Length: 56
Image (tube, rainbow, N blue to C red):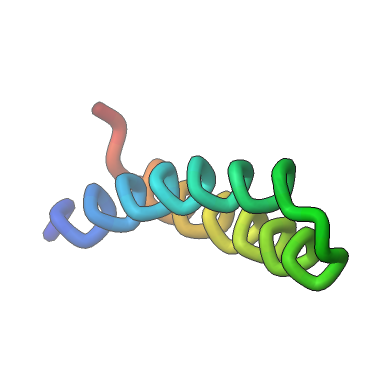
């Protein structure tokens, strides 16, 4: 089984969570807050997919 795609997905998800939490917390515009929240959910889904098969 090729674990590289899971590893890459997990790392991208963690980076996405970090950036999105920064955007969601510090944005003053409600649109940017919602974009940050959506990116948090997308990062959570990506990291859950990655960590489902690959554990460091």
